[in-house]
Length: 153
Image 1 (cartoon, rainbow, N blue to C red):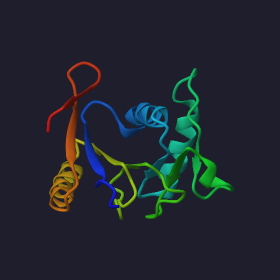
Image 2: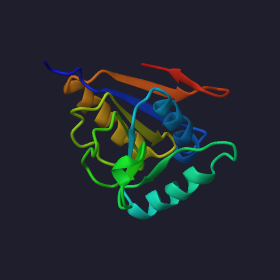
Image 3: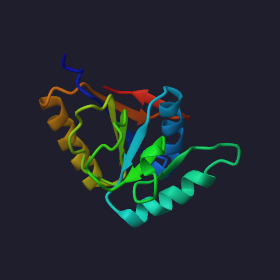
Image 4: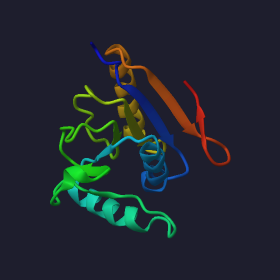
């Protein structure tokens, strides 16, 4: 039996950084009972994100770890630069222009991009077309005037 194609959601950041938005999205993902993979393009950047996720909100706890650490596969949220999907994650979050790789087995791929960066916008447009052509259901979310997200497409 074939599984449904991975949904691809584009998050157009206009006022917030990926570091500000990602923790809440990861909390919602874990709340669904899913495991998440955060793929970045730079290991040093992921180390900084790792530190940030421990301290982003005093009353929060977001269990996560770097793929390079011992027993990484046990982490509900795994940070990596690798193109694989270890331990069958449900959701993939792409930051800093990281390559999506193969989306087979994933329920959702979330691409976060900086709407103030022309090259990030251009890359997101190209990926939108590619994912759509490949048969993935795509959605486009833009930061609302206040707080929260508005589905645009």
